[in-house]
Image (tube, rainbow, N blue to C red):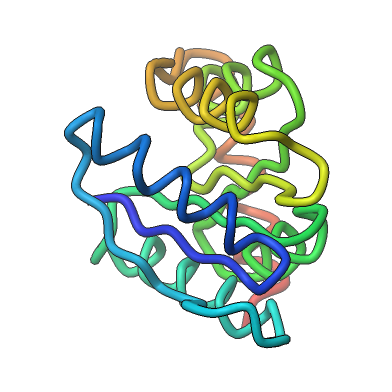
Length: 148
């Protein structure tokens, strides 16, 4: 299951992505927000990141105005590798080299078609492992060192 969340700045794009994911036959859970009222993005970024971190979701997508805030908050959660992407190459590499478990998008910087292309690229990519796994292990060691 894929969990998706947004703040008010990402709501419109999030709703379009839910439609895209549904058409692809991907089970989704919407972690909010559900209206255009101003909200604090850390609440929704944390909710999605915690669901992925604890295993109640396989992966996630976060959308805020630029994607910057959501990527910052999600990457504070141990085990999360949230990647803010703006093109198909970055999206594919986020999975192939970094095994990103959360994709982050900017609702005010991407149009619907581009965002769907980015999500599709990420979903269709496969983690390559090998030397990249060693690098992920190094990142996990950093988490262990600084997370108490």
